[in-house]
Image (tube, rainbow, N blue to C red; front, side):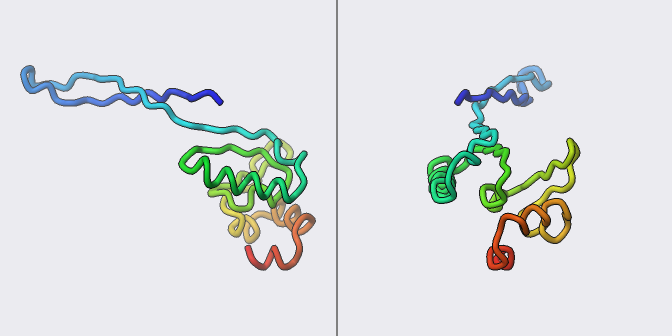
Length: 118
């Protein structure tokens, strides 16, 4: 994992000259990318790994490319891509209500009980 620097420009007042001076500050952002990494895992290991990530990588931005709804259903934001285009975005619950593509995938992968508990 490589930290990505983020530059922020601030302009504190220079009291002696009466005008702001640009100052560059760098903060390190933590960002993890999982490109379809979970699909090779069995469901139990997938769930265990996601639980550990939630606990150990709290506050870290995670981008997860996934084929399984179960892997991403607890995400803050899900972006559904269909045929190279964004078909919908939102939470699991929002997408079940508003995105036919997501709903079809969810219905094929999740039990009726899991769908009702969205």
